Length: 416
Image (cartoon, rainbow, N blue to C red; front, side):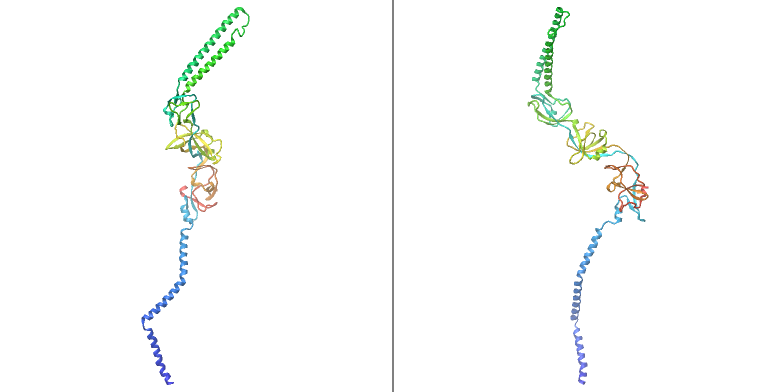
């Protein structure tokens, strides 16, 4: 018992001292502690790494949604022309117009093409060798009415005129001789038969009729020779331009042979396609005038006629314009056309900003929105032409966010 008690304190002291002695080195204790901390931290980060990734993705989605969101009511109102939201109440401020009824003249604007109504094929009516070609007979030449463009050798035609003239003189002399013979025969017959009628043969009526016929034939031959002589000198009865020429001096032309092509200046016109509605705005086409813009110049025009049928593919009509003055624009030129339409009485002219969806208008009546569809008469680059109507407190300009029937609005003080 004594040995056990004696040894017990001594052994306990040694064990505690040994344990304390084992913890005494600082290097070993530090490494053990930080190793356990790092291990614990690694296990913690591994556990939460999935949550971190999810959090980053969520932040990116929130940022994307913010920048791609639909515009707010404030954004729309800030961008809408003519509409301001009151900072005190929810009533929207709107801009309105109050037009006066007047007489409006709509204008039809379109694009047309300058073209030639018809070309003239130049052909010779007589045959012969060409002795003269005018400078204006060349391609692109400009000529006047009655100007000599070409001449064929006239000598044969001159001789024919002289011969037919002599035949005419001979036939005229024969008629005079037959008439003199008739007078002598009648006088002799009356001497022998005072009271008797002169027979036809005695009066030489058949011979006289024959002489008159021969004289008429001779006159026709002479006129034909003179006509052939005149035709040897080629002219045209209008002012125009030559587009093609294939004749030269010394060339032999046969009757009916073509040697060129030309057009009259008054055959130049403008073809303009228009819609059926635009044609309806013109009214009586004979009274409509307009302007053509080409090559930096303006030319007055008038409507000559309208096509008898619509184009089978485009369903457009076509009007034809003529220049009021002698101004030539090369055929094939594209031009801008402005034509004044028929005057329309009792109408409003509105700016394009007043037009709403489906050609409707927003009106202000009793401080509230009212949708109205006017009678649209014309839509031009300058705006709308509508039949006059009761617009209440005004016609709204611009768009209205969240517009609906009965929405309360307030007219801007600038429009009062």
